[in-house]
Length: 588
Image (tube, rainbow, N blue to C red; front, side):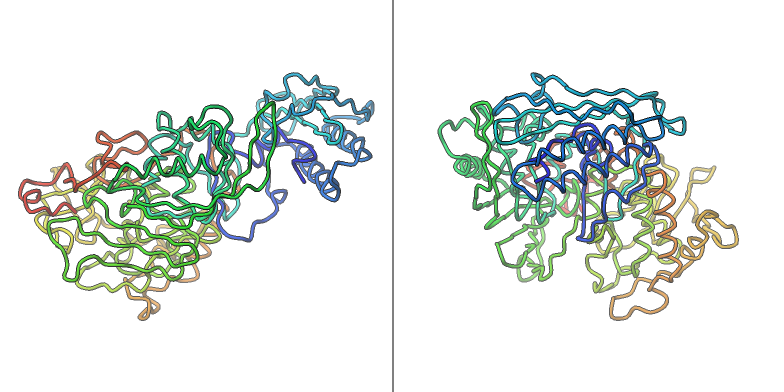
């Protein structure tokens, strides 16, 4: 009903559609607060009033098949009044509507070019309030209207200065812009979305160019249980005369003809047409694509290449998800492959994949503090954390047994989590290092440690080590955060980071592994300080990927596509692996 009334352009680009700025948005959970409740620190009050008025108008339209003409003068009056708020009188506000007869001219998605032949009947340019923090001096508004004899479509364009930052809701993240590298790497992760919207397929195809249409479409459909999709007009799939559903299934079959170890192995889909829209000789259908079966070869985490295909993700409609552990190393465990059946699949994104795609620093810092609200469990590596309902971080396996491995505790546990999120001391990579003594189950044939790329820091034997003036490394004293008041703006954080954080199995948790109440208070303070106040930056250059996989750059394609994409067919040793390790086949 909202789009039957008119298409919003300009205003939602700033407030509710940053995806049009090149960013991806992720919403997690059902408790979504009203967008009008958000503070807009860099947008003047009149714009917020206009924002509310627009949704009041759309609510009027929703009760009838066509927008009642009687409310249109009300819309114009609200528009004029809102734009004048704080800037003088609302007199001379016109209320006469002039709509051009143009059947089939305006497409469903309201592209700007559709309105080129419709002249505006109402334009307004007003100075900005003196209280605005924007460098712009004015705001403009234009109204255009068209009808086809039965339906009226109104375009409201509001030119606003783009704020440098924007607040985000607790269950929302703003990710780095999509690129070929990021999308191709995402296809080989163990992420499975519940629902995805691919309504602007042209923009997605542009991001993954030169990937063929069939590959781009099938691989995207293999990422979600349900997809709402609109195919582009024109020669997109080379299948003239075929229905949209046939085009989709043909694209899937074309991709599956090429056998591969990584990526799609099997994809069965059911296609249903939800609605059809005709535009200048092209009929576009809104399609609901339901996955009947998905089988993908996936990695342990973002761009993790040493073990080849770590898991096969298998999903069947109305059934439990399975992760089949494939041993492609030169050794196997007794009994063959290990199958993990996920009986309760929560809506989530693996933290390793989320960080690999790219976030700004403020969001990474808040995610780190959220991790401290969870009980400390064995093996706190980043792939064992999920971002789940409500945008909160949880452990993927809180009941994991510690076995004979030792894990960091206390403030070293804090530093271990920080290195995975790249919030301090730069970027870290996991690599072989024969100069330090280490002992762990996954280091057979060599010493595998974490080291900062600037060479100043190392993390091994569950401790943080710093380089001395002599070039050697010494255990780094972390001190007492409470006494030093390391976090003066959020004092609860001082208490939180001094917790013991012992790694215990879930059934054995006690006051040494369960976080204190100060950690929850600290998280709320940090979130308010970094995201709810100034908000996330809208400068795409400040969004960076973060991964500890050796040889994989942060945001650019790897030197070898087998490191990240679905082309890998065999295990690949790390660049720092010594010859004896490569010979034995122990690449992890």
